[in-house]
Length: 305
Image (cartoon, rainbow, N blue to C red; front, side, top):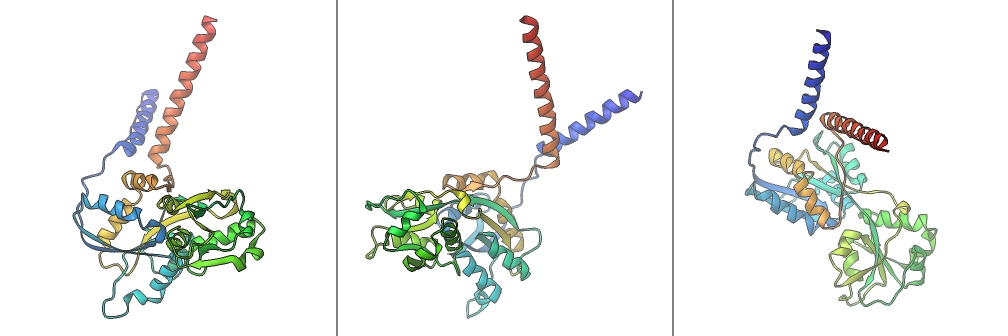
């Protein structure tokens, strides 16, 4: 009797584990109204594609995007400048690159608890104009150039990552006089682009930005990722939102497989979600089954030999 009870209990546990994974969510409700998003400039091309995908099931939701340096955008929210003037625009979602701007907003109680999430990774690229003959095989080669464009570290996380790159390559002091500061990473891209009137020799941008302009710039060198901090994109819903339900839903949509596949096509790397309890149980079961299969095959082979 005890054996039967234990067997039934084990079977129920396994079923529960698979149920957590396989259970399908109920049909999601559709949402409506405007969603105002402040987002990193490096999301300029990709975020609208994700929004368009979301609108297929939520056609009554509209989006208004403001792209720029994440630090500068976060400061606007903290100071409340986005709520000033004759046409104030409360921000519903903040989609940042680098943890620091989101940390700052969280410290100032600007985020709705439980909505902050890490979504994507990116890398740095050193770019030159498409028609440039400059050869760059290491970060130190930038010292041979006349000017190098980076985002302004005071308001642009890409500039902070660039300065880390210079420091860890041992050229921080020597390169400062050559730097031209951009208002955001897209401004840096434009400064290096071959169709500007005063082209900069090289620039440091995110790889995803470089990939959007390969007809104007080329990736001259990809620095090792251990020379700068991990580049993490995250989002959260803000306390000032006037459309909290839709904002929460779209914020959750950003980490769905559909949305992540769009980001991945643009060169971003999705951050894997932590495994659920059900997932852990299932993986454990599958792993045990695989081990038994391997042992069985080995035993059969030994018998034949």
